[in-house]
Image (cartoon, rainbow, N blue to C red; front, side, top):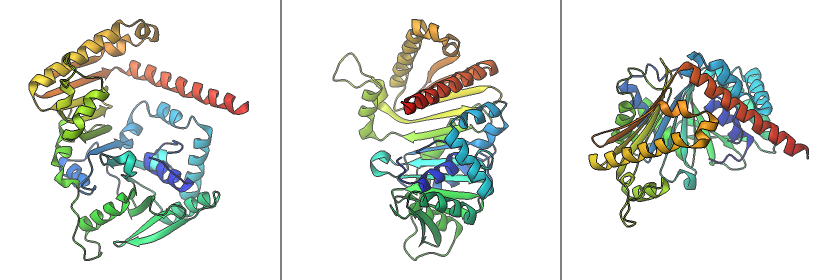
Length: 365
């Protein structure tokens, strides 16, 4: 997703809750029942084929939050912008953003279409818009408002309609591109009964029961909601391309590999009691699932035997990986102990610091 103004950056910071450059009522996913999940998906555009969510409240409750926060603020300019946002609006994205839900269509990159639903607290519309306007004016832009279906849409004056956002209430902000903010505005009007136009009510992605059911299946045997998850449908015409993208083919060059029968796939990350990541791939038949799992196992064994893996000290992480097929489903799980998570975060912090040092050195020459 490409942002063309500082307004877009500020909305992205509000959405993501971290200082990544260029890019309601509080409801934590940890306690959201299936009905709430389906209701949220129902307010997303019908063309949504990938849906995901991040539960920031869970991350803040984890023992690794302080280190994660330091990593999120490792860039000085991002840290400065977040501090200014908190000071002037009373909303600190690292503290006040509780939950993010995102949805994308099949050709998201080409269409520029997406929607982000941000739940949290201290979403003061007047102060946030004033701050966004001041930042936008530094680039000779402005933030303008448009009325649509009973909602006030905020967008940049230079590229109106490119990226738009609206406050559904004091605890929810919705931002979208490619016309999806307006689509979501229509759907929230439908769900809340806000007075709007007399045009036929749009149908949301609630029809995509598959997405919601897959999100629920990711939680099987866990008892809690994941801190991060996504679920994606794989249309039939895209399956051969998926198999090619992952380098999956049979000995017969004309025969597609087992990944070509993938119908849905999803990912979930659980934080308690240990870090547990799960990849779930749902295929059309058990035979292809068994073949795909066998290929994953072969790859894992090869990676474990690689000298580079030994040199980087990654063997223990690969030891934590389990791969299995159950009927037409392949599941890849990795469970890490607390010490391994700490080590992983330190590696990430070192990597980001090295990149920042390299950028500074390049800028000084």
